Structures are given as structure tokens and as C-alpha cells.
Image 1 (cartoon, rainbow over the protein chains, first blue to last red):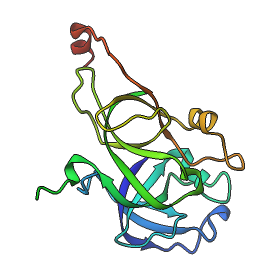
Image 2 (image 1 turned 90 degrees about the vertical axis):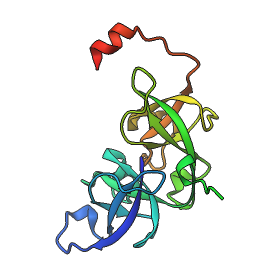
Image 3 (image 1 turned 135 degrees about the horizontal axis):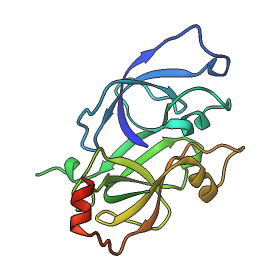
Image 4 (image 1 turned 45 degrees about the vertical axis):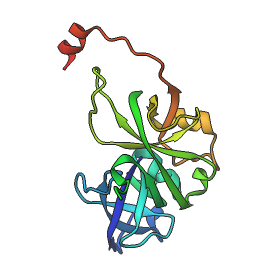
Length: 94
Length: 99
């Protein structure tokens, strides 16, 4: 599981059967401090996130468990909209 | 399983139902010398760990499902903190050979 920031949406009309109605978002993985790390990826969204949101994702086989349909071939799903991260890199120095 | 240092907590109000009531911590994986190695990850805490603790993280879905149970046979949780580490003993020569 990891953190990311939603940077855009992705639309695909032609999809495998189990993915009908699933919203796809483009996500930039980030560190707890909010620094981009790694490459952009497309993730399924089940929590109604939108561009600009800081989100938590689950990868691998467990991503498909977030969807209504079982055995869907996806490897990333947004499972939470992050309100706050308490981490040394996010502490204010004032 | 990975040896990690708990570096912080993550708070999310809007989340998948499987995460309701679960504590989510950010963890930094460590190498054999205790130095940070690789990207930080998020894990559900089942052992009352906190920031600064060295923990054992299981990154595998079947184990998570067995521990946490499932919702309709499914559970979108992969990483779980399964232990707070008291001590690690590594032979320095063996560790160097492994790097």
C-alpha cells in the first residue's frame, strides 16, 4: 500500500467486462512528505477521489478486491482519500 | 516479511469499508544494517505499534485476509504490521556478503 496524488482522469470505452463502470484516475506516487516518486500510473477509484486529491492506494491482487466484481485484471486501486499525514517530513518548522 | 521503521501515521476519512477502524501507518523498510532501503509503504497496524517502532510487515494478501477476515470473500488490504521488533542480530560479515 502506498500514497499518491491524483493528477488526472483516464477514459477507456473498450474494457474487459468486469471493469464496466469503474472510474480510472491517473496517479503520481508520492512519499509521505508529498514528493513525487516513480512513474505515473492508472488506478481504479472506489472512493470518489478527484484530481488534486492526496490518496492511499493498494496494489497487486488486492486492488481487484476493492471493486464490486471479483477477478478483475487491475493492479492498483485508490482505497482512501488522505486528510493528513503525520510524518517528520510534513512537520511545520514555525 | 520486511523489517521496517514506523515513520508516521496516515489519516483518511473517506475510505473503503475494509479500512474502517484500522490504523494506517507509514513504514520505511530497513536493510540488514538498519539503514533505510527503498520507498516507504503504508501498512495496517494490528499490534498497537507507533512512530519510531521497528516492526515486521507482511506484504501479502492471503496472510492479511486470514488475520483480518474478509468482506464477501474479499479484502483490499495487502500490508499488515504483524509484530514489534525488540532486537535483530545480524552477523556483520554475512550481512556484507549479502549486499
